[in-house]
Image (cartoon, rainbow, N blue to C red; front, side, top):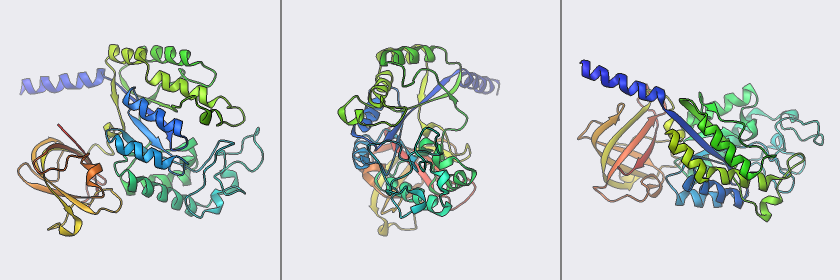
Length: 377
């Protein structure tokens, strides 16, 4: 008993002393250069989560890149605004209260004094039912293409800018099994900014990492590349978008930054490391038994947060790794999923050893939907 207690205390001490850092790359879908930079920031850099703007003009390119990189954690950047002057996007739904006179989203969340009149979303009194319909459509479209999305955030803060809008976002996140933002994390600020050069961003991020204290931290920034496409992006007061965001990419992929992370022993995390509810999480090692069309499932399957589930994947539980899985070791469990190729990341053969990490949407409900991530051990 004393040995067990000592081990528990040691683990608690290690957790207490650990520096955890979530680096989030925002705005996939709005530009080809943004899509390239966000993926590069994850594969060659320190970013571990990306945010997708579904109404963005380069959404389908973002989808393709994320399907090709199934290890990247994906969030939906709930969008109700379109800020740039020369490139715009519109609501996916027929929602006139969300659109300006040209049918585009309003540029700003609230009217700015230095902007033309009629450019603030909430000054135009958007209808709550149209906000909900639009955000629901965005979530369902992204989940149809990338079922593994784990969380949601608000582009320019618009989807959570009022108590009524936040209540809608929270309701939808509960319904689709998504975390809303990264609660409880401390922000790492002061290293970036449009007036800083790429070199300054890199050196200032190294300095910020060196000053981190034990705890959980978050960096939210916007990677990009300095191309003709992105040099055409901007609005009044922020004209150097391409140079600014290329500097973010340089910092996120910098060898000096990665060396500072390693030297401090910083653990890079994603939203997947932030449970919906401590009681809801579980994990188990398993073997794939079979993948069958949903109509061939005998005895039913556990519902997941996937939109339009058409397949069932059956696992044989080998060992409980965390929490309380839906089946004991030696038993089998079937989940209803949309895409075997995406959920199983190409590992569909019977007998394949995997680790299933899951979360119950409502931990105390027998009929709760599950969000699962399947990886190789």
